[in-house]
Length: 60
Image (cartoon, rainbow, N blue to C red; front, top):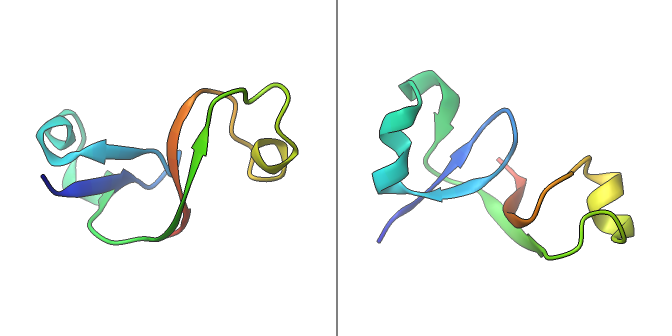
């Protein structure tokens, strides 16, 4: 299944979830991926301003 990225949060989502957003809010491609399991303890998550668990794109 294809993956998409929410531009505002850089969260990676399944293309089936993309219908919740307008086409301007979604990107089809990205470079790099980070999976955050404990955002409150992760220095990388703090640097990227990620505050919740999930998969995120490093560069859109």
